[in-house]
Image (cartoon, rainbow, N blue to C red):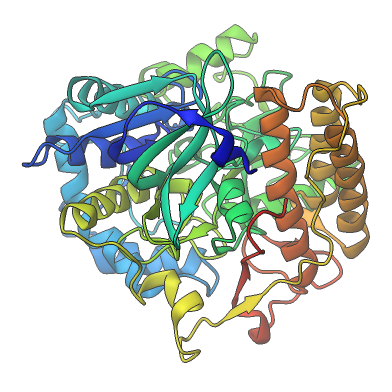
Length: 545
């Protein structure tokens, strides 16, 4: 008997159950709950409602809100350039054209963005952007303000908020998603029924030892999709943020890209500049990794001593630096790249539908085709707002399954799309079925640490066939410890299971893609090859891993 068959009845049933409480999930939930017709909307999150990666986002929201010097065409061009040939142009058009309206809706909801003395919105420029177009709050506390506004709206509108619940697997009946099996705060897993399920669980930063992501970012939605055989793509493209503070704190404090937009400089151990500070994140991270290898050091420096009124422009960052004893007016700031954002995920169409009817995905969990091989700075909050809203409108309009649009053309198209799909061989998929009897196994916290160290060393900013093989060996050993662990049926065990599932898929894709493109750099294949202008798609048989 399957876990879903054995599960008792839980809360619900819901018209829509949103898994996750970041910008994408809550944007969808608020829109659905406030629509005429009074849908019964539930939001399930494994932490507290406000405990998501969104609140850690610093830089802001990239959107063209007016002004002669900027246009949606320029925003589109910058996004396509950053994506290194793998962006779906229709998805990017949706993002840049609908983004301004979503930002204005957020302002109407109560989000307070920074403004100039004139009253106009203050706009910052970040890496990869040709114009200042990034709206921000508190200097570099945009995510916290966006999350605050959405959480308040959700608590007043959603039918049920299930905090500290952990979604384990999808319930699939007659070829359609009918809900999830979830672990409640206390007790055994139970089934929660829903006509529509939205995966909005964020990214996979906890695969790595050094990350800007909170502890909750364990790839849960992507792993659930992989186990159910729902197509997932572009997971080899993990963006590393170049200017994370080199400090024991975890998640790593971010030194926002806006600092470089205002004139902060990157320097090596000799004090020399070595890269264009406003290049896209993949370019800067790759240059930093190379320079650190050359110099035999584990960090470089960000020189913000030339920035005036630092504590006024960037109060959140200034407070973080004060806590660790740094003064940006006189100190160079130690930095190193940190795992930051997954550009791929569960493949969706332009409405957020996955290949499985009744299942939707939005935000960092989804592969919409917007980011391609590398996300343009400050497009992530925008993506969640835009595609969360589109998904909600599709559900309200009666849509039940995917259309052949956006990244979904890779899966359902006739092969004529300009970005074809290629199925990834899954011979190395991990065995994550539980052992017949628990025998203690390794401590799960130590196993998680070992996995993170191995992924950072083997699948970090720069990769090789040998480094990827080494990481795969480490994951297989961690998987065996998990299978035999008496702790596997706990939240800690569930998170490791998901990290192993997604990590295995990432390594398979990174091994197969024998080129360097965007956020994927192979030291043994340094050129970008036209034949690899494709999406690598995982669609494993349901139930494996």
